[in-house]
Amino acid sequence: MVAVILECTGQNDQMVDQWVWDGHCAPAAVKLSSNFEAAYFHTDPVNMSTGTVGVRGTKGFEDGEHYWEIVFLEPPAGSSVMVGVGTSRAVLSSDYCQYVNLLGMDRESWGLSYKGITWHGGLSCQFCEPFFDRRTVIGCHLDMDRGTLSFSRNGQHLGLAFTGLPREPIYPIISSTATDTELELGLRTCRYLSLQGKCMSVVKKCLRSVDLVDQLPLPESIRQCIRVW
Image 1 (cartoon, rainbow, N blue to C red):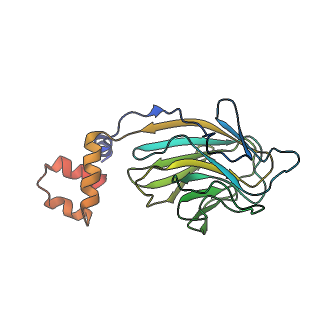
Image 2 (cartoon, rainbow, N blue to C red; image 1 turned 90 degrees about the vertical axis):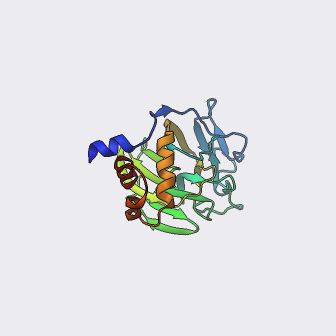
């Protein structure tokens, strides 16, 4: 069975990606490093934090698998520090002095807070243990072919957090309510389905039940690939 799964993955080799944080859409309370890989929140010594702000990546993903890491350069604190994803319509700032879980406050974004809680559509769920340590690395795995988002912490897989993500450009996003929050991009990779993989994905989505694959006029080797897809 392992051999069948490896044969049927239909994926091309993993590649390093180069996207960064988008300075064109970043609110004034978010400062970016010269290479646009690190984001510094609420750094004004006078105004301090006056609400919740976020910044998204320069690249929206429509297909393939995408992995990136967010490094907490300082211990997270405050009402909310989040990592996640959103559509181009996702809100990147709250009203004045509104300290909220920005990612997941509506149906345009999906997020995980440092308190271990996931948010989407204004609903929350305890997903994992909170993380408070400096240099914590949160890995985000977005599979646009399956519409899923998973997280890891310091290399340990935490599980599937969200399903049913739409097939439209989805952007990485981070947000914070807290003064002097510092988050940096780490490893970024991507991997795309081969033509064979895309075909199997479409066929399986069209089946009401995986058991119906036996009725397809296809070679048994292809039917087996669709079963394990």
